[in-house]
Image 1 (cartoon, rainbow, N blue to C red):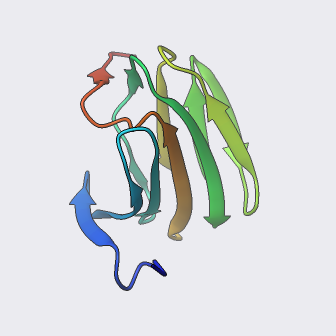
Image 2: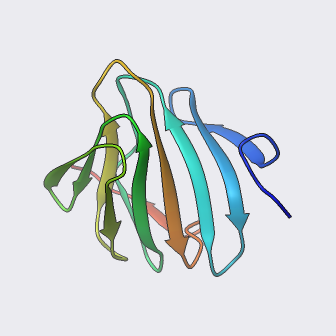
Image 3: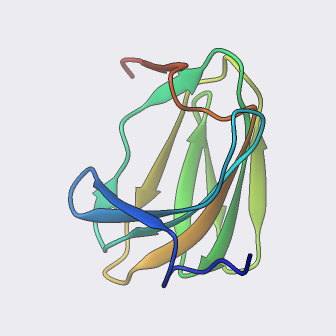
Length: 114
């Protein structure tokens, strides 16, 4: 079945950020996310999930285990399990990106302090 933001399961997270579940399986999750300007995700890690963040449009900063990595359109970064990370949109523009998790990250997220 063809999938897009138009027909995918939608949810809102954080400070008016959007997520669309493009693939929702126990062994694989692909989510299209949108973060408005000047928003951020909570710092966390996953026990089992390996994640890949890929920027579709805009610019974001992905903090991975204390290192800030600036990602622009068509750039990505992998985050292994057990590694604390946090996504930031420090611009005034929306950023859209894919979050690919294997296995799915739901249920194994642990919040951390900076």
